[in-house]
Length: 570
Image (cartoon, rainbow, N blue to C red; front, side):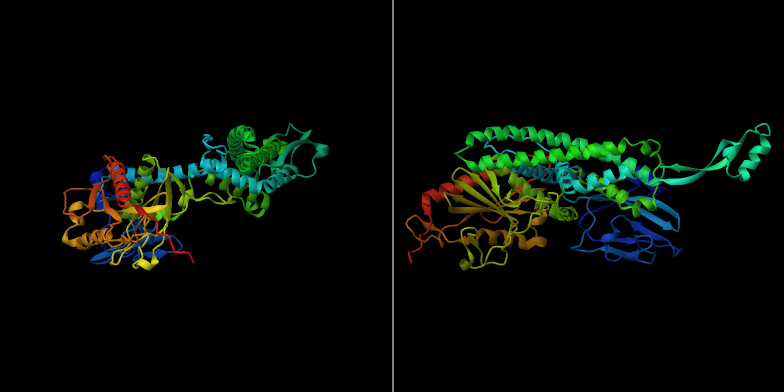
């Protein structure tokens, strides 16, 4: 392993000089030295239980000692694939190296693409939310796309506009300044006093008897807080201009929708009402942006800011103590932070700490995409659940256990359920939770419950395994075979159209599907179980498989004349 004098030089190291380890395996380090003051630190040490912490330096580190020091063991793998900087330090002296954590079942390129696909899909959901929420009042009308960052900025500006305008106008009237002492050549009768600089000038310029190099007081606005203000105004002006143009584009679309909605007057008042309200809301927002821009331009045009040089910014206590400067600086920084494609729940970052969890989320997203490719439209659940107007940024919620997404296509409905435990008794089932299981393994990663005209017809159970196929069903993972077999044995209350009970003879779980990234062999699988290799950069068979399963379930249900049991009248 090689070391460099700076972290920047370590970033340029050739792979031959970089230490490599595999993810999801126990890791220990041997750090010995005759100097007990040396400190070893690695990016990510803050997630490890056995490191020391220096509060003053905000540093997590290890000290040298004999033997191995455990970083993490089974079940706790905080380092995800990627490069980490290693530093060995004594006081101000340090050297730097690199640690490369490699994925176990995927190539580095595939792992990167897997993570990027998850990020891109979640970002796309955010845009989809905006389109469904702020546009498309008229059925089947395409709406304009509004960047997520601009949308968050507009929401923030809408709720803070009055205070921002008041602050800008107050600074226009009365900004901070400083009285400073300078020297100037003055006629003798105007010189009030002399100082050492005046005397030195007279001695070196005896011919200038009519003028005196005298100290004078001068008012200057070129102070640190005004330099910061001038810099913030440039940023704020650019943000406001972009937000107003985007809002104006959206306003044009919504105005057209409102004009078209007038055709629905007397037929569908809800469409007209929504279109009118959307248009009026965005019209008010665009007007507020214009007011904000006008206040910024007034302040930018003041004479005092012309003498302010914002080329060199520095911290200013007065900018912190004066609430006006402090407030505008915080507003500007907050608006910059909101200029992002997506704000997702923090738990998404935790998913990336474990590639097996990341693969599970990626696999679930693959299923969602496959259903849409088959013509099923999401209508409820997770991101698609109708929600009230939000005053804060829109944040994509984490995909929680038990979350169900509803898909529709004609008379067919599919409930895609994530990580929900199945009840272990028939008494606990209902229309939305049709399956029960009497075995130990009762928590599949995903399940598709299929309905036709409101009648439950059957299910497909899916599990995501971040393992090689050869290892997954070996003795080391002997419970996987039993787990998949248990899923296949799940039962439901099934009746014919005439009310005949088929619960003991009908198998509602048509198949159990296992997705893995590396099918290095064809292992023996339980009856009714299918193994598919699914990973980035590889041909996917998932959509065709689901299409076939969905059709077969429906055909069997039609042959068996599955219906809904009518409850006796009370």
